[in-house]
Every structure is written in structure tokens, then in C-alpha cells.
Length: 312
Image (cartoon, rainbow, N blue to C red; front, side, top):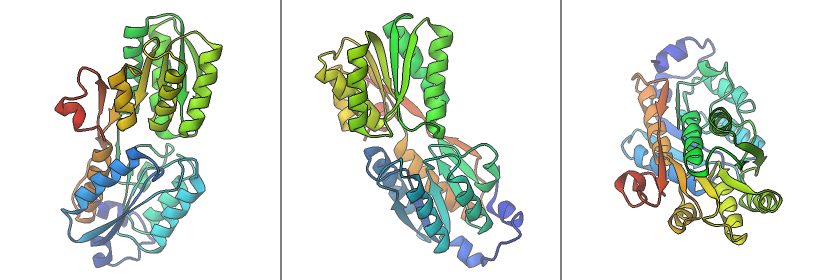
């Protein structure tokens, strides 16, 4: 458990007044604004800030997840305008670490959401809120084995190599497949979170391989993967599992293109992230790690409250 004052006392360069640290802008900075997933994070953050009248909230992110330098600049800008706190989904575990350290040294509390920073930087932020991506990857892998069997080829369609969420999600999917089946893994292939890239990559992979299964590890990647499967006339012939839950992926689950999609609590990331920063600013204790959950949505449960609460 950590408190803001504990962190601040450890920072000798603190030069903020108590009033400045207790109220003001909470900057929510995500990997990209061009995604339904991150817009759902915005909805959660907006819902949370309504309960904290002493604070305002801004929401921002680069045009693409691969625009790492742009995200660094957004965090630097937030520090320069002396925001009260930051909720950050880092696009790169190494590149964002120095600027998070700078926020810490400026007395600005940070809650990290979705993807972790590189190991060794934990002291520079006060809370981490995420899906247990390793557990989610294993869940998807076991579903793949249960439905596609323990032999043949399974392709892995990933997004941005080295991102914290990708390391856990894709790494644990692959490790679980290798440890519990005789499946041959094809890939991973990296779409850079671009739907069109994922579509083209999947089209090529389907043409070159007889697959029994395929896994699309985030929203734009899974959409491109699903569209390629449909265009190839292989919907329902391959065990396809996606990740995230916008309307395109919901339609693919309903049509049978996807057996299932693993849906994170994106709304909860925004809501609980803002709440965590507000609590830290109020001097309350927060838990170091907050699991925002994952639901495996399929045709049978897609209309249930459990699934509807995380779909967007």
C-alpha cells in the first residue's frame, strides 16, 4: 500500500504547495485516441471525474499506438502545465519510463493502466491497473486447445512488440500452447495495431498455411484478422479467438467468424484509474495493483449482463 505523501517525502526536489497537489487537472493519456477501446477508457474516466468536483479531467493520446514520441511529448506537456495527477497507458515500457520519473520528481502522482513500465520503475508511480494479461493469454490458449485440438498450426497475430500488455498476453498464450499441446506456432506477426496491416498479414498467412486456429491479440489486429478470414471464405472453419470487444468484434462473434473474444474492463481502467489518482491526492491509501478483469465473450453469453458490462 502506498500514500502520496510517502512518495512525495522521498522526493527531495518537491516544490509544490499542498493546495496545488490536492486539486486540479487529472490528465488521462492513452496509447491512441483512434480506437473504440481507448474511447471506452475515456467514458470510464469521465464517469469517475463527475464524483470528484475538486478536479477536472483531460483525455488525450497520439494518433497511433506506434507514435511513441508523441505520447512522451503529451506526458511532458502535462508535467509542464503542473497537472495534479496523471493516468497513463504507456505505449512503450522503456520510452515512457524517464518521463514518468520526471512526473514523480515533480510531485505528480501517476497511475499506470493497461501496460506496465519496464521493471525497476515501480517506485515512480503509485498504482498499476490492468487486465492480468498473462492470465488472459493462458485463458485464450486453453480455449484454443479445447476447440482446435493439440496438433496442427496456430497463427498468432500480435500488435506492437515489447509493449507490457503484449509481452504478457501473447507471451503467455504462446507458452501455454507449447506446454500443453503439440501445436506448431506460426508467428507472432506484428500489425503495429493497424487493422489494414493485420488484414494483409492474415490474408498472406492463410494462403501459405493450413491453420487449425488463429489468435488476434488486440482490437484492430483482431478486426483485420477476422475480415481476412471472412474474405478467404474460412469463417467457421478455423478456431479464431480475438481480444477486446467493440461492435465489429461482437458482430464477428455473433456470425461465428470468431469463436470468442477476450474483453478487458476498459471502462474500469478509466474509472478506477481516475479514482486511484483522486484518492492518492486526498492522502488515501491505494493498492499497488488493481486487476480490471477480463471476460471471454462467446455466442452463448454475449447478451448476458456479465458480457454487456464490458462490451463497448
